[in-house]
Length: 64
Image (tube, rainbow, N blue to C red; front, side, top):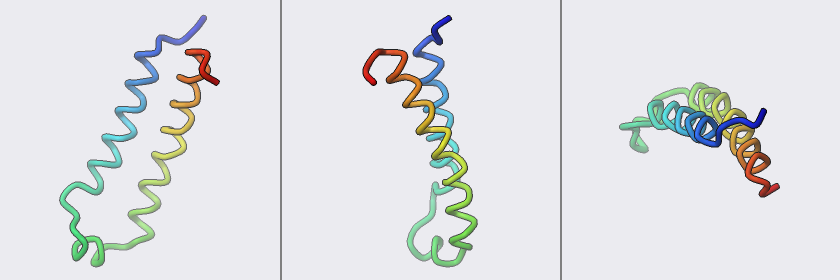
C-alpha cells in the first residue's frame, strides 16, 4: 500500500524542525563556544532521516 505523500512531508518537517531547534539563536560567537562535534552529531542524526524521507517521497510520486 502506498504511503500518503503527506506523511513524507510530515517527516521532512520534523527533521528540519529538529535541526532548526538545535541551531536556533546561535550566532557565530555562540557557535564557536559550543562543541562542533556536538553540533554536527545532532545535525548528522537528522540528515539521513531527511534524505531517506525525500527519496521515499520522490519514489512514491514517480519522480525517481
